[in-house]
Amino acid sequence: MKKILLTGVTGFLGNALARHWLGAGYEVSALIRSTSRRARVEGLAGNIHLYRYGGDEDVFSTIANVAPDYIVHTACSYGRAGESLVSIFDANVRFGLLLLEGAKSLNKKVAFLNTGTILDPAVSSYAMSKQSFSAIGALQAAQGGSGIKFINVALQHMYGPGDDNSKFTTHVISSCLANVDRLSLASGVQQRDFVFIDDVVSAYDVMLSNMNSLADVETIEVGSGEAVPVKSFVETVHSMTASLTKLEFGVVPYRANEAMFFQADINRISSLGWLPTTSLAAGIQKTIDKDRVQ
Image (tube, rainbow, N blue to C red; front, side):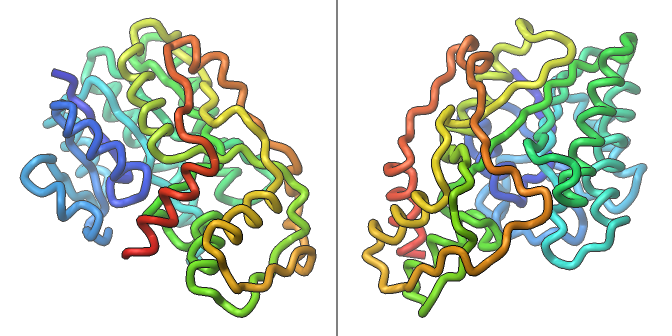
């Protein structure tokens, strides 16, 4: 049986992965902060092994107890709630380093599946810290002798029902459903690769199932493989919700170093037998339907 240690289980992606792997019969353990809200994990009680941590030794003892075959790292700090720079780097770099050190101490082969970012480091402290850890993790695995296989997932613009309202896609959908008076936006000509949560989960599952065929260090892009103008996404949501909200494109400036084009190269993940199955319209409709009844 696959033994998985998961971080970020109280978050959108981590929780979806936990539910999928528990349903598949895997032994899933999760490491969560003692201060984390538990709303998302309440339905998992009794099926998942939860370990709380407040310090370094908690991380090491959890890894020693679980002795995982796979560490799937989805926990992060986006820095959207006024977190300090130290706090962001602690969550996005230092925590990952503790996981790596703990895995190395097991003296066994451990596959580390890291959720990276496609954003340029110059965009934000979040992007800088995430890119930093991805580089460090790859270096550790490449040096050999660590027993770590490090797979960095370059994840595109994930969306789906139940995601945090601070995310752009969720904010747009919830605003249109609520018929807010107006929605202030950038011009929307930038293009993004929107990928539905169910497809992301299946991509992670495929990577775990094919771990033996992966190199010790790889970056694998996950997305729909299609670039869609942000304005088209917003207008599609607006139409599908029959919203009365006034869309104000062009009134919000782009952030510094904003990338204008993202499109995943899915050749590598496709070679493992994965393809996205949820169209953008279908994904938006599923999100609308579930968010509407919540």
